Image 1 (cartoon, rainbow, N blue to C red):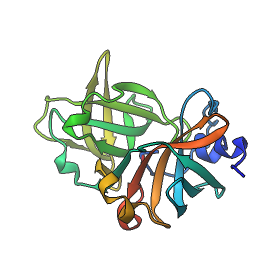
Image 2 (cartoon, rainbow, N blue to C red):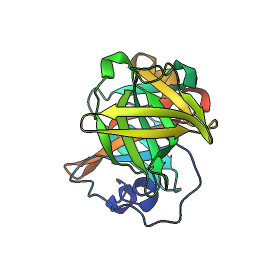
Image 3 (cartoon, one colour):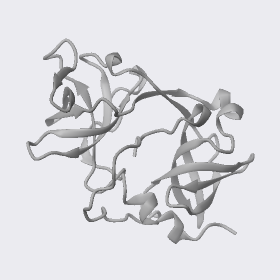
Image 4 (cartoon, one colour):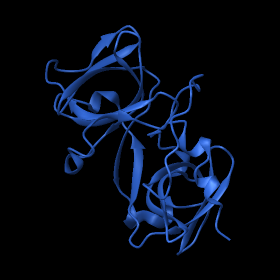
Length: 221
């Protein structure tokens, strides 16, 4: 029996934003819940069981969901790097929350491999936590390195049609990723922390893509 649709649309799975992980829950209204039939959703949690055809995970709200695996389902290994790896011209994504001064406070930072430059460029709502946003953009060349400011390191991000100033606190995870299909047996194991893009197809919940950390590392998206 497949998990009820309501499980895939739970507030814990959709209304509290990732990329991953980070801060205390804000006391703000949850973001509107999209229909899983309209577009993919992100499920964050821990793998419980894996076989050739399905993934079962316990998502962060506590519900257990079983999903069929899409054909040739992409797997990405997410792993930590240092903030110093970010240089002018780096293409990054950051989940963040807006600050009163107009800047964004990062919840996590993902450094895209060069082959993924331009992915989903822009600034838009995100579902890691209420009121969070995602900015996928290029680090400005105005400075040779992130600038130290009260609260953390400052990055100026430029994307088509706009610019955002992001403050990255010292305790915020900074990660990148690489293809993981060749190492699937070591990565997709019970207990692994995952971010799964899922969608309802022909009435069946399907895992479209999996981001996973090695040895218990949790993708912070």
